Structures are given as structure tokens and as C-alpha cells.
Length: 327
Image 1 (cartoon, rainbow, N blue to C red):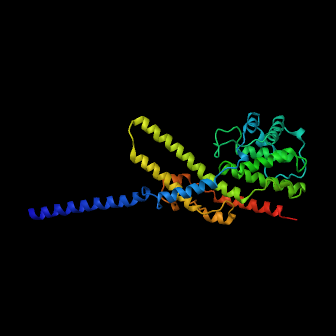
Image 2: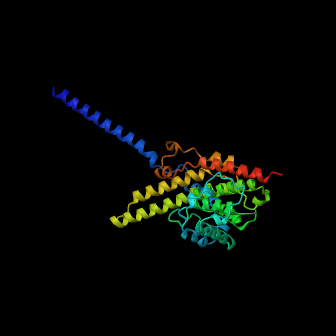
Image 3: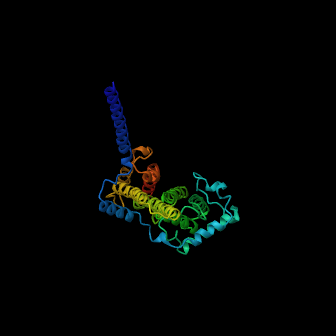
């Protein structure tokens, strides 16, 4: 009887240990994909990321001082979005009389014109912060529409300022700024068509494939750099609070950052600066389903489903090219 009881206890113990072991193995299999290093050598990852960083370069002309542009933000423009001429789809056929604009709006158009004439830009930062900002990207879009509406010729200073603003937004900053820049180009196309201006009126500020490729790369790099700064700040705060080094946490952070560099460096590896739009789209994953992305908390957190935005830009490029290439 005792032997049977002893054997039963041993079996119970074995079963218990086996269950615990299997649970541990299962947990390890579940956790390991989230902590394993990227599937490329560090040298390969850094080389590809450096190439992506080059694609993300901002233009020199957009790096001029933006103070003259920011002055517009000090004007009382609270009713800007309520003006009918800031709405999309409104015909540009007949110029709007400047005298009918609120005083602040007329001053804003003058200031935008002054910004262009004095060689203004969007500032030295490749990735200007979205907040705080005197003028949001959407407000700049509204202002460009107003400038186009009040212009009276293809070479009107207000119109040229709107075209320059759109070009610079396509060449500096992340996705939001760039998409607004391409939208201003689309507005200028309707403006030229409604007014009967020749294609030559838009040629100098033509949106390009290179601007699109650079914009996609810049959105990735800008998001990465922001996350890197925030993670470094958080790690410093934790060290200051505990006065202890946290090597495991530090390794985890470095792994997450490396996963982002590996994934996007690999996705856009070999993409030419002026790659055809369809070639670029083929490299962009459909990340509406985040479960399909590699196991990385940071990579998934930074995943912006911008494929649809890029497809919209491709359509705008095609319309612009068709107009400029017309007889």
C-alpha cells in the first residue's frame, strides 16, 4: 500500500513538473519572438539604415529661416477655416477681390508673399515638430488656397508664394507636411486649369517622384528619431529615480530600435531616389493588420498606415504630369 502511495506521489510530482516544464517552454516560445534580435547582422542593418537616412534628406531651399512664415501665426486667424474660399473643390475661375477679405487674412497673404520674396524656408530641422507650431499644416493649406484665389495672373506674387510653400512642404518634415504640400500642388493644378493658364505656369514647382520617395523615407526616419529621443529621456528618468543601471531594459530598448532600423531598412533597400511610384508602393506593406508586422512593440507602435496616403499622392502626380505634358 505504501509503495503504491509512494508511486502515486512520484507520478503526481512528475506530472506536475512536466506541466510546469511545458508551461515554461510554451511561455518561452511565446516570448522569444519579442526579444530575439533582428534577423540580420548589425553591419547590414546599419548600412541599409544609412541609405534610408540619405533618402530622407531635406532640400537646401526648404532649410531657410521660417520666422517670416511664423509671423502669420500671430495674426488673428481664428475664422480662417470658416472662409468659403478655404474649402476644397471651390472653382478658381474668377479672382476673389482682396478688399472682401478680413483684414487679418489679407495681411496673412501679404506676409506669405514676403516670406517667399525674402528667401524664407521651413527652418533648419529636417523633422520640424508638429507641436507647438504657430501655424498648423492644415492652416497653411487654407492660406495657400486663399493666395491662389486672390491672385490675378499666373505670375502673381501671391500665387507664386503658394506654389513655393507647397514645394517646400514636400521637401521637409514628415508625412502630414508632405501630404499637404502635394495637396497644394493639386490645388494649383485646378487653379491653372480653371484660369486657363498654360502648363508653363506650373513647371518650376512641379511635384516629383523624388519628393515622394524622400517624404516616405523622412516619415520613417523622423518617427524613429522622435521615439529614440523619448526612450532615451525615459531611460534617463528611470536611472535618476532608481540610481541603478538597468542593463536588461537598456538591451530591450536597443533591440526595439534595431528592429525598426532593420525592418524599414530592408523594406526600402535598393529604392532609387526617383523610383517609379508603383515600385515604391510595392515596398510599402499593408499594415492595417498590425499582427502581420514582426514582433516588436516599437515597430508596431510607429506603424502608420500611410500606404493609402501615398496612393493618393501618386494619383495627384499623375494628374499634374498629364497637364504639364499636354500640348
